[in-house]
Length: 110
Image (cartoon, rainbow, N blue to C red; front, side, top):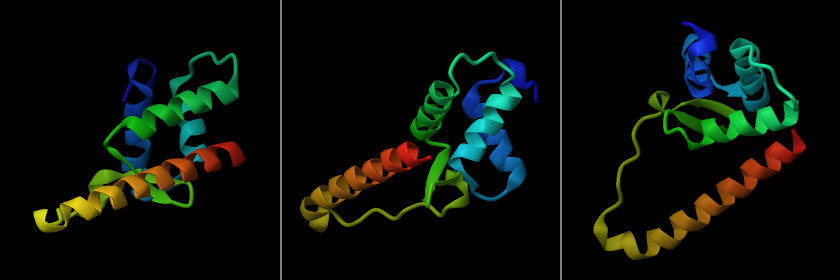
C-alpha cells in the first residue's frame, strides 16, 4: 500500500486489518500519522482530525475502553420488531448520546 497517496482512514483500515485485533485509539492514530509521513504543525490537531475521520467512517467500530476495531469483525445487529420501535427510539438516542460523551471524554483524557 502506498501510504503517501492513501487517505488516513484507508491507512487505519490497513493497520487494523493486518493487526487483526482492536487497537487503542491513540496508538492507531499516531501510527496513521507516522505512515502518512505528512508534515504536521500540531500533533494534537492532527490526532483530533484523524480520530474524527475514523469515528465518521462506518468501516470502524468503537469497541469500548478507547479501543477501535473493524465493523466487519462484529456480527450484524438484528433489528427490533416495529412494535417496540417507539420506545427503542429514545433508548437508542440516549445510548448514542452516552457513547459520544464517552468518546469525547476519552479524547480529552488521552
